[in-house]
Image (cartoon, rainbow, N blue to C red; front, side):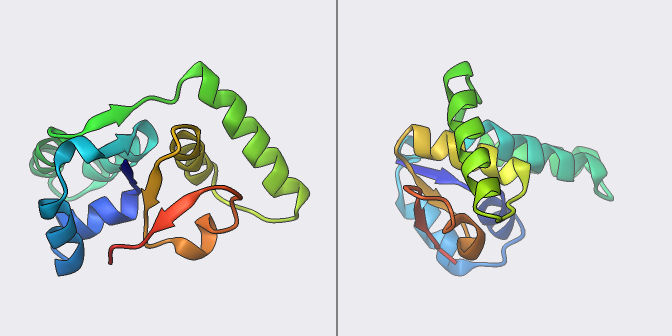
Length: 131
């Protein structure tokens, strides 16, 4: 199962990666999901943009075929442990990215991201870069 990171979605939505587009179009939607935090970040970007209604419609149409994976009570433990470990190592990763990673690792999915450097610091997180 593939979970898309925010940057992967943005590259697709903005038409900035033929490779991501090809991979998304060739992968059955049932094999792709969106962590709830990614949806939240995409919606935030739409609301902050020049044409919120148009962008929001574009984002909603993009998300429609995919399951949105919630930040459940069980995943809060995964998040807290993951963030604690990262901080104890002296590293920093944005809290939203840790939520995305926690959701992905909890479900043993593969995170599709172009932010490989940051996410590779999280032990046990499977990553692919489709860009």
